[in-house]
Image 1 (cartoon, rainbow, N blue to C red):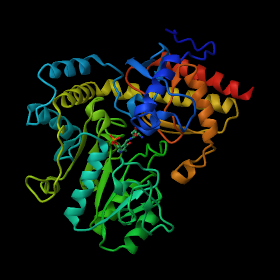
Image 2: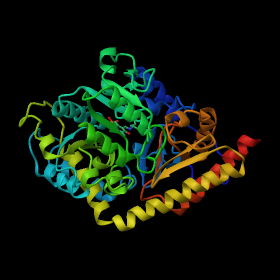
Image 3: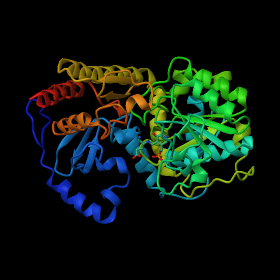
Length: 446
Ligand code: KE4
């Protein structure tokens, strides 16, 4: 097993990973069960992970990496965090699933409601995709309207109506963002530029009384990290309220990440600024499959079996997933005054340390960061929307990703993803990361 030595450049041996990739490609398109894992955006072959602990991943060839994607958000307490592991082990001994009600669902719901008072009632599902898809169906039923507004660069899972990109004009209907999405479905979605309220006003003016909801990432993670402009979220809430459209805040990534109460807490989306519906995922399941949609009780009571909106799921509220989520959220609540300052300080040091090495190497780089989620865009700033993010030099990012991976630092394999770190990352990992970046930029210069 490689010890982590960033003082020398080592090209890790990945023969076992290569063999596993060969086998995987026989069964899975691209050898993966989710596209971003294939490393197509950065080149190189993805190492296969054997196990992980704390801030570290260990691959099938015994190489060790500092983990900066953390299962795309969930692993905020670090890998194999003992209270979470023990909770899952305990639950597993009582059988993995019942398909009937358990106390564990209410236990986790109490914790979610404590962190998100706006979530008066909720329903568990098994992924973020199910959460946003269900929230949109609820919004359409509640308003009797069909059009949905989303924003370029925001990703809300792969439900048909959300795989839509901007049409020709700002207020014209969307076009399919994927093969297999019917035009008729795409035509019910408008994709607008993020951080641009005039585009939102234009959309409502063009479709008066027809927009059911606006859905957004309150801090974009899926274009790379893009924070909301000052006042943007509050103004968006005011416009939707004036127009009788619901505001759905998709906190699948930001929930419990940017603050214990997510972006709703961080940007004080409370009282008359409160969203109508919130979706959660990732951290709320502690690494097991959990999605949540919830909000005002009069909206949620439209759901079957009480109301006319159908929604269901075999493994919704799965007892193992509930136990992992409960152990995670409980630990975050009980230790928030230690955890969040540590995440902020460590992420600041790592993100700014690497940005300083880029500056020293005269590599154009713009850092956007909110707490322990951030992105190094390989371009001069600013990056305030997807259009500006898309100007990034993705080839340069790909070279950087490969150089860092070879030095034992595993960054998210795409310029348009957010990096994350967890409670187990500390100064040692920051120093190793900054040293690896210094070498990676020097390698490029030579
Ligand atoms: P899932 O269906 O992948 O659980 O959640 C969809 C989703 C919804 N909303 C937001 C804000 C999200 O970030 C996501 C999923 N995020 C991606 C990472 N960018 C998941 C990684 C992947 O697709 O493999």
